[in-house]
Length: 126
Image (tube, rainbow, N blue to C red; front, side):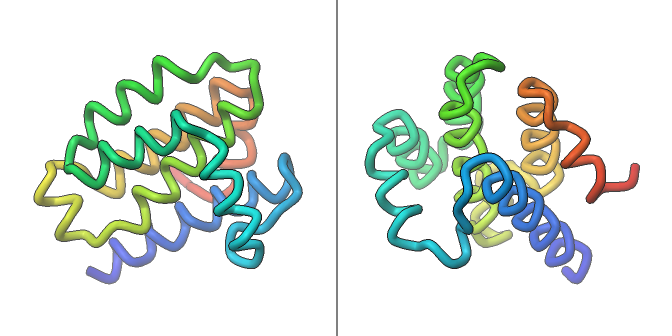
């Protein structure tokens, strides 16, 4: 349990740091701005709906169809997706056959695609 809490905190901090550096807002402080960003992105909303229905693998597959390695708005969508997923309870993730490690790996994969893997690797030692 302690290890899962630690992984959850590290995932959140990595996502928070990348969003702060690239998009200049703090997901922990700018709740209104974060909400506005989320509302403006229909694709993100549909992904989050899939997550809420427990279709996490399908949501992640659709996310990977969306990201292209160039459009930074799509990177933001991916990071917000993983942040939302990371906020889910362990029991929800387990019930839907998903893990914190898969969230971490997804963040790493997206970061690598957009050339910001170094930011992520600074937080995780293999």
